Image (cartoon, rainbow, N blue to C red):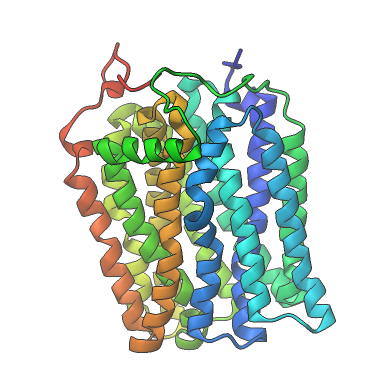
Length: 426
């Protein structure tokens, strides 16, 4: 039986939260250290930076759908979570080793990004359907908000730590922190005690056959469900534009704005500060205004970061406060949006298809980042860094338009009406 006590008093939730906290903090270090290694030490061109960004999300396109279908069939998902963290740690350890041996290259970094990205895809495919074995249904929104606070806290601590480690140890050796975080996360996950179900849930409507039938069913559920279809469209727009911007962000900050690594980390950390605030207020906002309405408003504010970054120019005394404010506001809205997004996704997904639905959304919203990173790099080469950033900002503004024109605005869902439950929950 799932523990119904407050989350902060549940041992396994605290372990799960800690595992995500240390792993995400380490990932924030590598998110800055890897592109800095490529751009500063290896002289990577914009197209190579785009390939580096794309490599991390390419596994979503290659294995995302079968990973989700496979996760629904797994009897025990926890060993898979532990194994993914261990393999990712080993991959990260090869970067400083290759630098010491004098063989590190952009191609090596791309390979490492691909391996870690593959681990991330499998981890997330198993993690989402694993969550109900630790957290009760009525604590869903609070739990997702708690994990979003992890990501936001990591966004605050990680870039500052990354900047410090890069300046003191050099970028390749800063990745040792990420490897250590993967190992600690694996230890926390291995210590969970909550029993997992004896097997995947059975349902008469579940397709009979192999993984192909499961994948096809997951696609059918998402594409025929108006709310899930809205989520997937908005997620694709946001992540495509974000990946394109990410491919150019470090080059733009260093070459155009003339900012050092420490300041770049500070700007990114401001996004995390907004996220921490967002994670703290989201449960109260959703309780008062509903998940649907809260997501609508948050999506409207979300493009602030890209608009401000594209417009930034002048001395650091002008640029830093301006971009910091934009990142703070976007961090606040992005986390509120993400919490509501995840909660609505769980609410609308059939119980026996959580993994499949999650894989379809993940492949679409994360896999598109592969194309976004490549397009961002090409745009930076063809039209320049600032015009490319303006293009990203214009594209991300389409996401809130899509959400406002969807059933999320026009309809009150069954889940938000007292005394009723969604008809698609099993």
